[in-house]
Length: 287
Image (cartoon, rainbow, N blue to C red; front, side, top):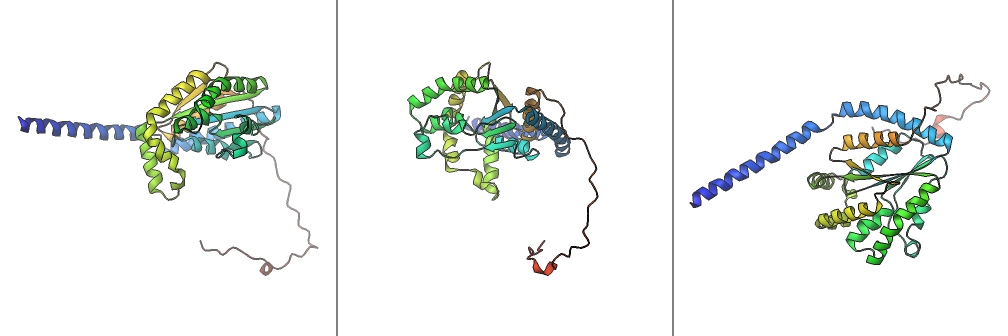
């Protein structure tokens, strides 16, 4: 009898391992190939530049909020968007821990100071929604402050919309399995290790609490005027393309990019004698 039980356990373990490898294989098959991704990304970057020129010409005020779990891929999407745009037009805002002075201010005050002027795009790498997620779960705010945020946030966003600001909110959704993989990758890669903070480690024990906080946040702030758009982010490449493609579809625009032109010939003033090259200090060419 005991032998049969052991046999059943062994079979169950084999089946479980087989399912795991099947899931991993399926995941690899579903991943977007790099060449295909780069081709699609180039097309999307061209459209982003067109959108930028339209926003600049029409003095639009655009705010894009990126929220989600740790290692969900928000930073990668933000860098992809900003990477091909003019930094004078497209600005990334990633605020740190509030100072004592900021803690005494109206909660939305330090975020309001970062809002765009006409002709600007602001990408919030985490935003005022910190209060509904990290601050709530980790106990960094009181319950009264949290409840007040849930009441005030929809009103704050309505004010932004009435002022002519275009507000777009993305929530990046990642599975616990994929998040674990990304955390392990960050630990083993010295160039990524800085991305894991002590709070990220502490948050691992609060997966359910974060899920509950996100669901409650959505119930208050997923409004008709300012809805949340959820991005499936287990595949980073697909998530970037899907998110940016959706962003381009939200704001109607026309192609105002400058047309190609010819450069005038470079003029050389023969009367000018440049100082010797040996007077300059050069960086050693080690590579």
